[in-house]
Image (cartoon, rainbow, N blue to C red; front, side):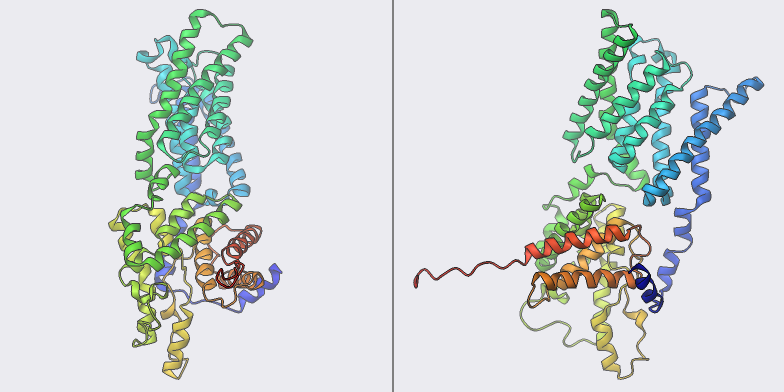
Length: 498
């Protein structure tokens, strides 16, 4: 089946507009460049080795110390390389994004840097309880918020290893590694479903309690617990949890600097009382209802394949805000039988339809929406053809060769992530399902399969990392959602005649 689809695709080349070619050219190569990726990994390994070893440049060092330093660089680089292999096979989208790799490395370096300050700066290391402040959970909470539990749980053990290797650690490095590994792993679990700042605070408190519990157990095993140490354990656990609360500052900084968005910020945008959504419900009620339906369908599909479901929901809420400028020109907002396109040429109508993407981008920037939402607005139609008006233009011209297909295509780019690809699929299918005269389960199944295959054959899914297995799951979820939506109600007998 896959080979058959690939052969079909070879027969249908799609012309690219210049803007699309530019967007997928140098900019895309820089975003995914292996050389830049290598530079990020090597620089991170170098800096981690510098922080861990405590070596001082440019002061003269013994040859043995320099040898140990570069051996440490090699060890860290090897660990990083093994992680990249994991990303290549299991999280391809993350592997390809140099921006996300750089953000991850920044969080890793920041965590190790803060721990070295506690260990080496006299102001801190002379205070007895600072040795029991474990900053592994600090970095892991940040990673969970940005990248999800799957990645952060893996890094719980990596970050614990690096913190335990820091020169001058007290108590024993094995204790440091164990406590950081366990508390960090639990932190990633506590943060898994965090959607607001209250839940984030609660997770930080749980992390502090877990730290105290683990430290007492491990030190009991090695036989160094006494009443005097208990106070230090409690202070250490308190400040470990407190470090999680300080994340509010870092969270805002990282979101701003890297143009990434966490579920905490997304939840604020998902409030239906947002000014932009209220404007949509008043001026374009049909578009608003369409967006809500797309959000429900797309969120369920995203959740089924392990993508960021809340992100997809918020993308769906805002993906058609460009229709606010001329809502009456879009079928879902038309009142009565008369269409606004009746007196326009097909090319003018197509221009109005396509312009809602650009208008949406401008509106999103005016309301300071995050970059990922703007990307969703750009990508949700990809480079697809406005087929109805394209065919109408051919009829008007009388000669189909005169009409250029590229003038009736959206500018793109095509969906770059799983989330925008899911949005694109759900948006197309939801709109098409409204035209079904008899929305029976078999017709819904046929429509969904046909439209997903069409997107694949037209190359609209080429630039995202969706697999055939994930497409199958998405298809099944959408069929189930639409079948439930269009189910027939029983005809109740008339009370008067009953």
